[in-house]
View (cartoon, rainbow, N blue to C red):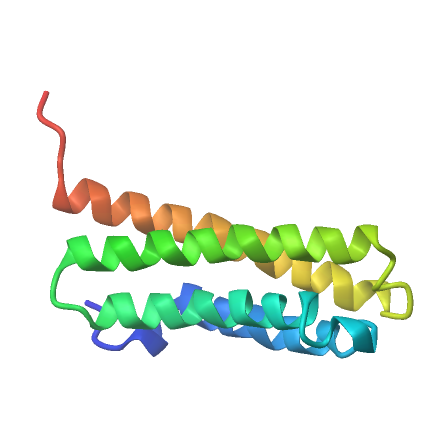
Length: 128
């Protein structure tokens, strides 16, 4: 049984994603410092933060709620990353760094979905 959120691989990956986003946002134009850059950083930090807070709660139902919030933040972040890419803000960024962030985002998305499903099935089994 997981005793601490830091043991969750999805939390660890979400932390890697947040760190990657912080690195990417350094390349955004200065006029985006309080716009897209700020939004991306907040969304990225929200993902591991909600995983941690949910795991620290007393019930599976509460954990599920926070995992759903983390999933929403991950989708928000992906949208912002795609917009920044579409606007050409990552042209000076090595492609490998961009690819890593998108890969981490996809991986975190899949892991959050899987964890949410497993908790839901364990907490609310369907009767046949």
